[in-house]
Length: 100
Image (cartoon, rainbow, N blue to C red; front, side, top):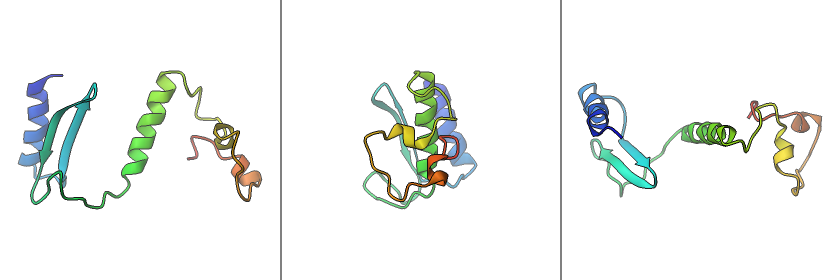
């Protein structure tokens, strides 16, 4: 990774006073950037709205690239063959990975 580019990102966030509490970059299992802004630090938990969607979509993209998922048109129920889904109706059966 380019350390100068990573520094530029942190400088940009600080210069533009972006509404970010922290920046964390991990590569190959190692933290390469860990910066906190304002009152925040790694010991202060706080609410993170809507972050799950970002992580989930990134993981789906990685799974598709690695060949674990063939396409977004797969049905959600296909991923849980050993599970009993409560109130399973045609609407739930038709939910695709893309819908989720």
